[in-house]
Image 1 (cartoon, rainbow, N blue to C red):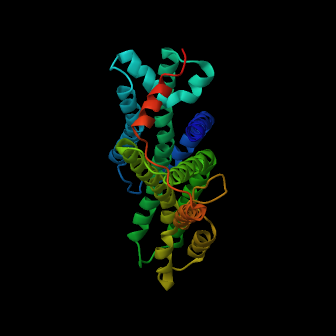
Image 2 (tube, helix red, strand yellow):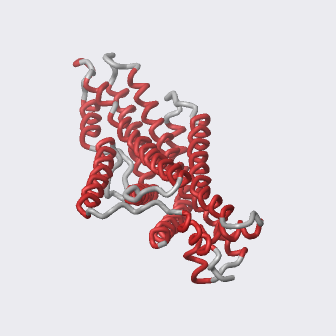
Image 3 (cartoon, rainbow, N blue to C red):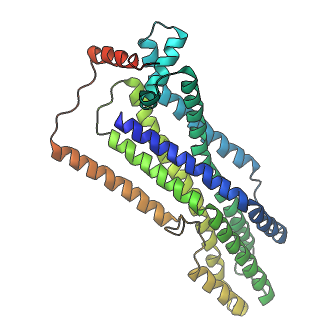
Length: 340
């Protein structure tokens, strides 16, 4: 129960912080949208991707995966509730709520309305937690598309003669995008930090759980799906956020191939800005989300798992046996022990 309490506390704290950060973001949203609209109007001649179908696809996938994870998380509780009752609806409902929220009812006593309230709150927290990652993905994709449109425009003039006025306009457009990225980062950096922190915490928590044997098929399915789901979320958020930095560096390829006759002060200034200025989303300036950072995160997770394996081998403790029928009987008695 200690681990379940820690998991529930961390999950609740994460979703509460998510709510507070999005409320804070709402106060800055009008200014952010005005600046974004200004960029859209000034760079209307760049060909941009129709992101509406992409957004719908990303939203559907993330929310569907969150729904599957939530259903699997409750499957064992439902199976246990059905096993420990006589299929009486109120009895099954009571056993289900106690199995999931025993640490609450031990302190306050059981009642049906508390169980329903906790279950509804749990559903809201599950989707709000996933929405935080979805929001970062969508904003990153939209921002990266602006840089990609500029890169596609520059690709059409590779190795061609251009005037200094042309390069000044392109450099100013790039600078506008860089300023927009910094504005987005100021609004989004705390949410990004919370996203990485919570996701990595739950990945490490599940890796810690991998040190004990799985008790039944339902628990095994949920455990492996949860690990896959968390890793996919971390990868999706990381790659989408890192794409902003990747696309912001692509103009260097075109600038390096500028003909000698077209090389001018504006090209030089543009190159200096590209090589010295880091345009990327950050986690409250603690880290910049780049592909190098993604490899660092992956290395940290692997290191943590190796340390856990070594610690588990060094302890030389016998494995915990799988629960027997007696354990199941005791578990049913435990479910019925919580008073109203």
